[in-house]
Length: 233
Image (tube, rainbow, N blue to C red; front, top):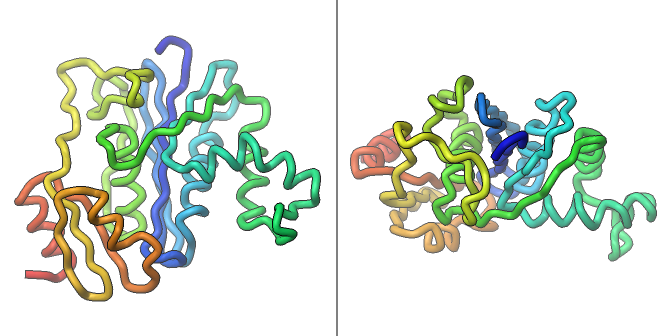
């Protein structure tokens, strides 16, 4: 996709609130960059916002169109629709309450200013490589686990950066694409579950407060490694 910058961003929290992480990929036809970070006590929405904020902040000035892909309807609706009413009403929402995460919304407005951005929704955990990689970065930071972040030539990057319609940056055939999930592991209040689909796992972990972990494995060996990291088996 000539003369365009592609971004994928995601956020994750272990509990809502709980430890959280965010991840993002910023790429054009020449280079790719992965970034991520964490907070000890946060929410999923704040991490989703921080993923987008930090990705856009990394682009200082550009006349190129930026396509930002995210699985957060909260982020997209907020920045393209809701913020205008919030600003007009003094950051009071439709229920007459103060807008949550105002500090991050104001920061997102700031880093978006003067940039040409297309906000693109992509479904989470449906096999979009860029989204899956950002989720891996975000959850690794949320769990305070080490993860190697890429910075280099786009031709050396492992993941295709296209959405479900094929729009984006397609990496050359010599690069390896990410394999599909083997299983989804969750540890909810000390109880382990291993599911074959994200939908099953999501039902167990979504909205649960307290001691919650979840992670995708790529193979049986990887599944055993994750369990070992968690102190199981």
